[in-house]
Image (tube, rainbow, N blue to C red; front, side):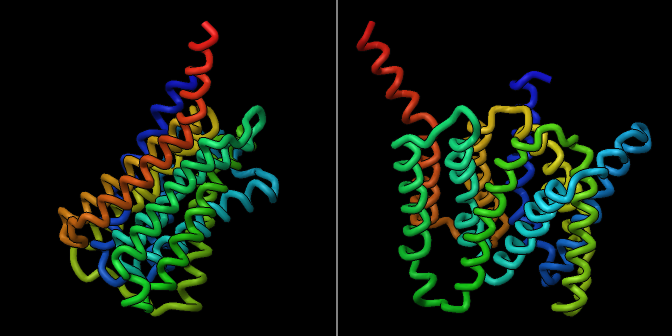
Length: 297
């Protein structure tokens, strides 16, 4: 598989994740851990079905403890935080705060072998955080609604968890993507245990809510993880990091269309700053190098 093909496959995860917030909001009042258990069960079964025609895929479950720790830390840790954030804070604000993870992927990828952190990356990071400041302080959400603070904190931590999982996956490129099915099923089990301990069961009340739960498991919490794994391990990780900023734009647009958020100048400005930050972090140093090369010529 070529780098371009793997990158294209990884990009489909970005399109699927743009549906995550609106589907989650449309599932009703299902508790976070219960929702994670239900959707990850579906997502894990997506991978298991492929073993019917490829029985050797089940061998991918034989991994070292550190690989399992990475997989569960990324999938269970991130989504437990993300679903909780969407429940405890407005979906648009929590989603955009969480979408610092693409910028962090760009920054963290600089520490991979052969890469280094450059001034353009730092400038990009500052622009990204400026977007977060505009989002929270500009709308006065934290000052006026202190009850949203736990949700914002969960979203912020989730961004670090997912970006770390994504970049570290590159260091374990020898682990087959079939292992993701095991990570999903184990995440479903852990989520179910946490649900029994901390939550009261609330089943979907309408057919539409059931459809959204299944859709979450098939797409944003299913196929997306498999194709993302391929993109992170074999594709252009920096390009995927930058391209991931299409997700908050599409996600926020879908939330607005679905009636879960309002179209405001603050949302547009914060999202714009974050996108510009990612572009600067990725391409700023390269453009500088091109200018110097032209001067020498």
